[in-house]
Image 1: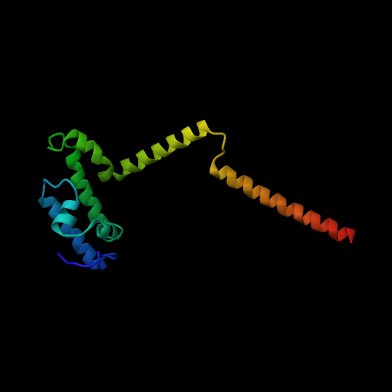
Image 2: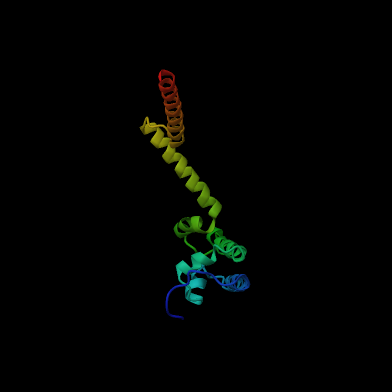
Length: 152
């Protein structure tokens, strides 16, 4: 394992593609893998911060998503040795569409509860009110300047 400061940039596009292919091949050959960190940290020696850089790269992303789905199947398979409680816990990791929907549902619930508890209008309404107030103040200033002009 290399020493020194963790990587903050990724490899070249070609290297990222090769790394993605290597990961996907490794995942396919290891039916007992339950998390991608088994590959990127244990097998390859990358830390999480480096991994986050890799999964942002467009050329690596298809391999990453394929690998996630391969592992995710183990969490849904009734024959799998993954325990039900653990399976439920990891679904948000492996099924980003589920995570996104749950996040939206939770935000909607928070918004509804906040609205029910408060007379404070939503932020967009407050911005509209502030904009209207500024426009009226500008018109009032113009009118006051015009009155001064006419009086002199």
